[in-house]
Amino acid sequence: MRIVVISDTHGNSYALESVIMRNTDADWIIHLGDGERELDNFILSHQRMAPKIIHVAGNCDFDSLSDDYFVLPLIGHKLLATHGHLYGVGCSLDKLKALAAANECDIILFGHTHERYQSFEDGFYIMNPGSASIPRDGAKPSFGHIDITPEGDVVTNIVNV
Image (cartoon, rainbow, N blue to C red; front, side):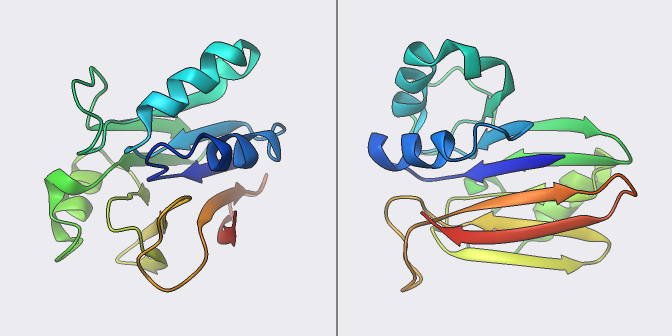
């Protein structure tokens, strides 16, 4: 199973479309917020992709009706995805880990900081794919993917847009 993770596109429709169209074989495509408008436009013009696209609201997705987090059950795993601004991800991941634990999740995805991050800590696979549009970590624009093998192994990777 492959999950593509994108965040913080901030109006950059080209970056969003580039990532998704290069990964049409993904099982899930998750947008972690701050790009809902261009994602909605993409879905309108690529409706066959809509069933496998999930997204949450970011702090710049004004008037969004989307949830601030969601839980996705997977075979042998449970994934928590959020933008992260409501959980203090710029300072600590503790609130996010507590939310994941409360929802029995072992995979955590967040955005907001525009900085790439991937780790396995405290029993959680954690990923921030960085920003596909405006990175703040000195790296190129990026997105992530998660591969879950039939044996249940989890591999995370962050790549350039």
